[in-house]
Image (tube, rainbow, N blue to C red; front, side):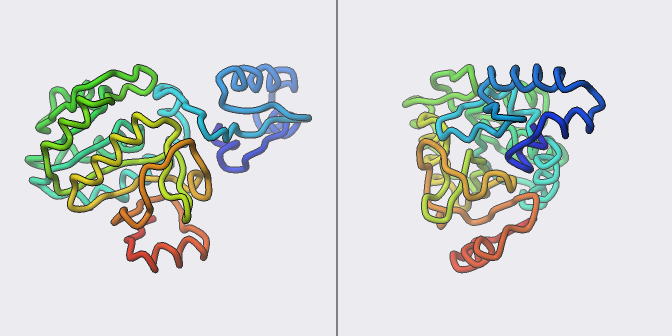
Length: 241
């Protein structure tokens, strides 16, 4: 999946040589990935499944582009200060960041992430759960109850990720319930930080979360192209990579 995210397409013969296995082994592996809706097989190989409504489960997403997530987390760590109040979504990239904030003092975290709550239950973080309806697929709490809880609080920073981002279309998600939660988090925060690896740029997903101009800081894993660089500068967005 790492190679697919980097190159968008892979070939059976190249993979068999790279991993020193038979072509048939590679074909079986690609077939399994296709059954999970992660790839589409084509003549001689496979391409990444970029269907706009593709909604990959949390357990599968946590292993995709993991090195990029760790890189982004390390780059974003200094943006959070002792005593900050945060709203954090249920993304795997945000979870990676929280793992680097354990030494921060007096952090208050409002989140809709079941996985985050479970992992940091014995930490020094003050964690407030949004409550709401559970999307087991993504370990996320969504719906009216979650939104109403978020509306009760005003925080220093919202930290979110996204499925895709585009200069004209903004931030996008593969499902509406989580998109609504992220939008509400942004509205309740003095500033917002987007954690997004380079594979999400110039992509489209099912539903819009917000305009890019509503984001204060973008943290990514590599320098974007000149068009993106100029757009980010024109919209007074801080860029970290």
